[in-house]
Amino acid sequence: MIDWSTNHDGVAIEVAVVPGDAGGAKLDVQVAVDDHGEPALERLLDALRHATSQAELLAHDITGAYRVEDLLAVHAVVADDDPAPAERWLRRRLSKETAVHVHTRGGRASARATFVRRGERPTSQRKVYARVDDKIRVEAFELHVVEHCNLRCAHCCNMSPYLAERTLTVAEIEAMCRTMATHLQVDVFKIMGGEPLLHPEITAVLRAIRRSGISETIRLFTNGLRLHAMDDAFWGALDELTISHYTSAPVRPAHLEAARAKARAFDVVLNVKPVGEFSEVMRAAREHDDAAIRDTYERCWLRHRCLVVRRGKFYMCTRAAYAEEFHRDIVHGAHPDDREAALARDGVPLDTPDLGAALLSYLNRAEPLVSCRFCHGGDGPVAAHTQLSKADVRAGRLHPLRVREA
Image (tube, rainbow, N blue to C red; front, side, top):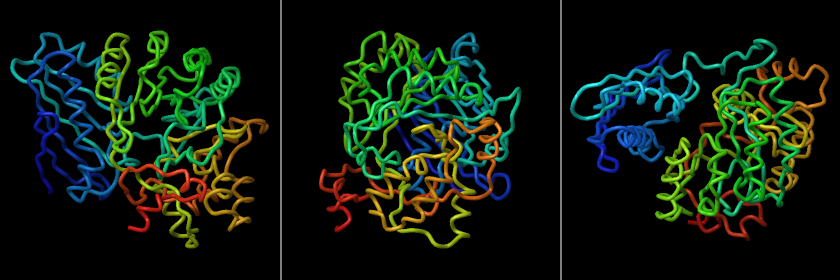
């Protein structure tokens, strides 16, 4: 057993690594704060996120990804008279599969949480997908409402630094969502990019997605750099907001505090996610070992949480969705057979007859994608978060030249 203690924003955190099922490992995390009500819960959840951040885990030689989305159970103690509001608050912010238990007592608010490594939750739908009432339940489905970005992050898995400006219309977005809503039961619909706040009609986009009935939970991901320009109508249309607070391009503290105030005022679930490292996903060197490719595919959690529609096709991951640009801009046409095979076989056209059956077969496929030959999956090396230069992008580099030469 490995144990350590740490501190985040004045909150003491105790972590233990304990044996899990089938030889895996679980994290047992305990935190306590002096606050009451929602401020206490916000600090508790923030501390849990910190305890499972890449930087914290790497500092203690813990491999694999552990996230709040993978919580098995949370046992919370609050100082309030009625535990019901705290339980409702937590259930809005945790997976439907997480067991939530809240009790009351005097004194400090505390929580004990059990995390499993991504891909190892026993109740996960990852192993076998099935149709219930003609719909396939999926953990997440995303749409890139714009593909360009106001940053050039190295290792961006959506390849935004290399892409031309592209914005989906509100009508296109609603039509795609309505099509997928007939086939998928989506736990969380993710609005992504690029940078979604570059969409000139982002509030109308939010409303169109809600009209489509694709999911009860709509979550927007942003780097936060344009968040201060969003009006009250935008905040009123949101369910959840995740701010990727990049160390190489941080959001101004005043803008973060304003976002927190807006989230409280409009009852938006807010996650400010500090990001100091990116896991490398793309790889410019082709993997030739079929066994290694299969192992990457079987262990990859991205193919269950990054489902996306792009240019009329459904894909289980962004690596496949952007295969054409990857082969053009990153490997510069060095593997034409792989490019053609990926374009032909790695996605499902939305005009496929009996689309629901085709999607089910695709999501349950045992054969890796062609694009897996150029992908680390969810287990790529971790690198410090950095920005590419324009010259890096023009050359198709995955790493900034100054970093690669260091």
